[in-house]
Image (cartoon, rainbow, N blue to C red; front, side):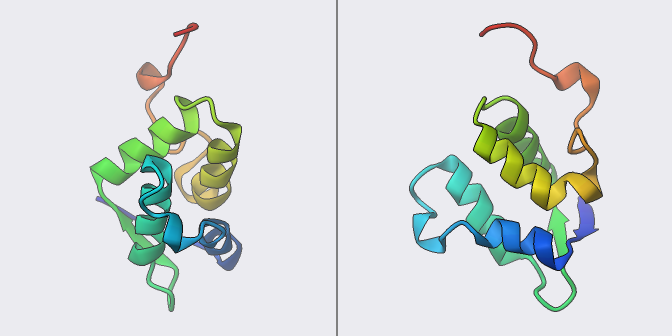
Length: 95
């Protein structure tokens, strides 16, 4: 479990996803779950191993630039440019 404190702009990045899209796909489900986990008074959010794995996977393995941008904008400052991922987990190659 890793707890980070998000700033207002980082929370706003997550809040761009409409909660009504929660069941439209796995990425939307993740983002809406993150919205619900944030302590709105402090910006604190506790990320379990499953959350971190999904954040990393959607940012780096999905090949969807918008997803990466959203996750980097929300978590890049607190988790780092690799979003906490160890180098051996990076995807290399064409498929």
